[in-house]
Image (cartoon, rainbow over all chains, first blue to last red; front, side, top):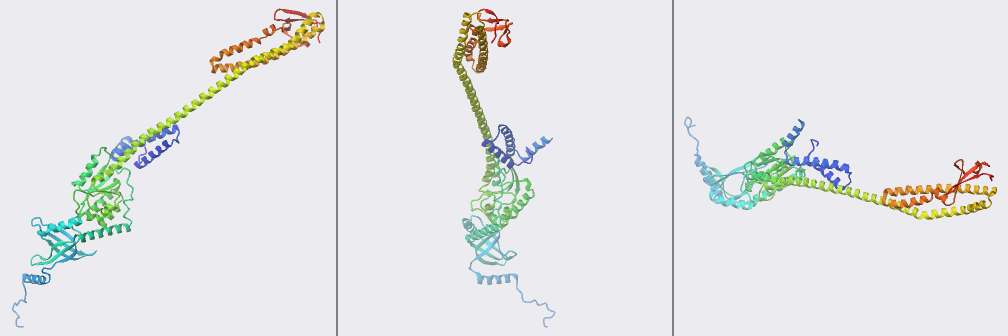
Length: 65
Length: 487
């Protein structure tokens, strides 16, 4: 997940993926990739909902170390 | 100058004499008279012990104070005047208000000139307040500020809230309690900026708080102005252009929870979101998080469901295809089986045809043989016999070869069918019997013979030499003959 992504951007990308999956115009191989990406975005959004920026930054710092 | 050298004072008066004189002049003109006076209430203070209320009345233009006078509401009038005022305006008398007061001019040698206030006309103040409010709205609209904050984009998740309030106030308590008691604990961070929220000092204090927030604007997503629990007093400041314009220019969306029962103030009209109470303001923020939380949950379900459906379609496609494949294979087997049956059915007529052909060719041959027997020793007949025999042999060889080819085709079909249908073995056995019928031994049994010379089958009379011996193999036994003549 890109560090600078905002909740809005993540949420928008998530909605686009859902639209794509719903439309069915997607290959089985692509589906796997998209669902995986959706999972990442959902985790990111949930973190934004429930974790303060400070907590998120702490997590990022720990990852960097 | 007769008075030179003597200290003779000019005619003078005592202070009290002058004051009494002024008092009597004023009394002559103003005694027992009252006037309705328009003025601005600069300050108002109630003397707690006596119950008397002291006012500072002014008239000013934009630059300067043009007139100023003290006013007194005696304790016996204070309650009736303030209650009358509040009943109409919904707010107590407060500094900054334009008022219409019934005044009697009074002069006291010690306390000087003042107004003795005996009545108030609250509808004048109401009108003035409305006028000021209308002027604020009109100016904000002219300057393009009226919709500015309302049109700002509120982040999907307003997480970092700069709260303008008073820490000990009921409103702030309600706001924070609502946030903290929500069943889902979202990551909402509030930072308090203390400010005076009503009365004369509210405008500069709120403006200062707004400026402080804008000094570190990158740390916040939204501003909440939270007031409550202090009644409806002193809300006039929220109609003032000076405050409304500061809030309208805010670089962050503003949520108001000012908490009062009177009409919407100008500030509440221009903020991004006006909530009736501090609790409602907290709920508004929480709702945004709830909506997102709900949406994410729904998205998760949707992905699960869509993926399941999608895979379902794929499986269905695959199963449709395999059904089709089965059908195609079955079809092919049936066609092979049909071919096999046709070959089977045609076999007797093939054989019969072959036999009748053989017979046609055989009878002349038999006749010749009989003739040969009859005219034994006659070389002409013998040669004819040899000739016919050779021809027969040739024809037979061709027929046999073609039969064998047909049969091998049949066998190929059969073995293909055998791979697909194990129960076709029986038919193959049947065919094999037919094949046996065509064995050369069987041919010999039917009266044909094979002519050999030096152990090799003779197929060409040219290769034989007169006088040599040839062997003629019959179904039973072998004849040895000597060639006497060739045609």
